[in-house]
Image 1 (cartoon, rainbow, N blue to C red):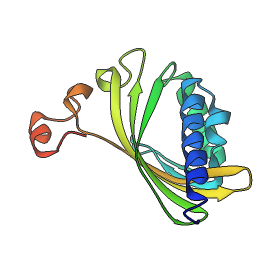
Image 2 (image 1 turned 180 degrees about the vertical axis):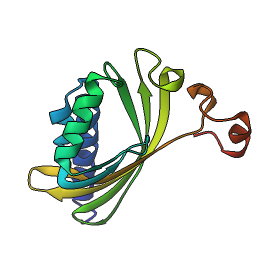
Image 3 (image 1 turned 180 degrees about the horizontal axis):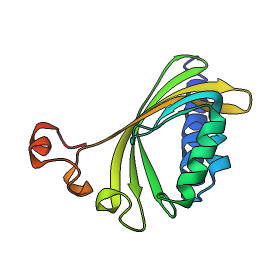
Image 4 (image 1 turned 30 degrees about the vertical axis):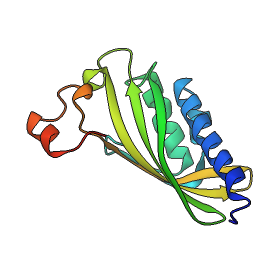
Amino acid sequence: MTPRTWPNELRRILDTIARLAAAWNEGDEAGYASHFTDDANYIAASGERYRGKAQIRTGYGWLFTTSLRGSRISLEIESVRSWSPVIALVTLRARLETPDDTVDGRHALIRSSLLMFLATGGWRVAALHGTRIADRRCGSRRPPSMWTSIGSP
């Protein structure tokens, strides 16, 4: 990717991330899964692993009708790095809010790394790894001793 083309590709990457969040917020498992490659590797903050777009769609189809029904996610981009015209690493912070107490404290903070590839039709997520962030605002999910040893997100 040349310095001249990077701003356009960066906008396309950010647009893909925004559409990913919008699909989640609509509970649209097909729309959510459409932003992943066919052979994507997805490790959720819960530890669940999904292999491929089909498993992501099936898994989130179930979650959007059960424990994540009515949930909302907001994403904050922390960094975007690229080493070639077709590969980017995106790190972000996600705030997950649920309408009831299905998630401790009704919300969770998650840090995710997304390996993205430029494919036909735009940028797609080839790998996602999410990890919960220890944060007091998220309820008592972690013991207080952890809050003093792990910095604020």
